[in-house]
Image 1 (tube, rainbow, N blue to C red):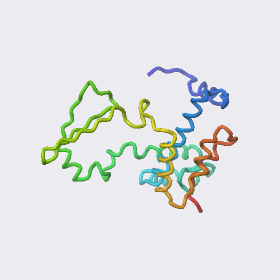
Image 2: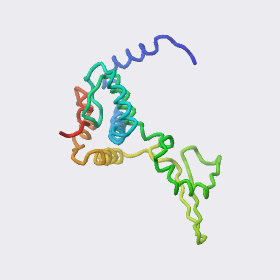
Image 3: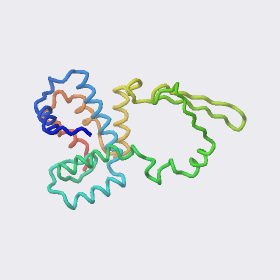
Length: 204
């Protein structure tokens, strides 16, 4: 690995010196979309077992309560909050590592024995095709040229907003996610982006 001293400091200075107006409009819009997606997956994962374990562990050594945890009433120090919020947002990324998930269901495992996976170099890494032959001899085919959410098949703004609303409803039916959605789309006018996290805590 190339060692280049001062990389962190240079990046920090660049970020600190960059103003919202310095960023091209399309990039600013993608930032809003990314935040919409982040809060959706963070709310979906904030109360999972791994996050609960991490919170209990980090809370014992926490140096303060100044930072918000997305989807939770607890507060913790900024460094731990950064880790826990990221963990909650990514906890569902690796479902195959959790033995109790559906991918390890005996019925799914039994079905795997009937599946033959063929690697076709004509397909891109984000494409797939499925062919199923049922017991009566009928063949069903389905293909997807690009995974939903990929660069060539992106989710629309409406899709991302619906994803956040769905995740919020599953997280706490009492929670009104509209203020958070509105605040993300109005990020250009915000003077304090930390307010976004405060809009994603459990209702009292």
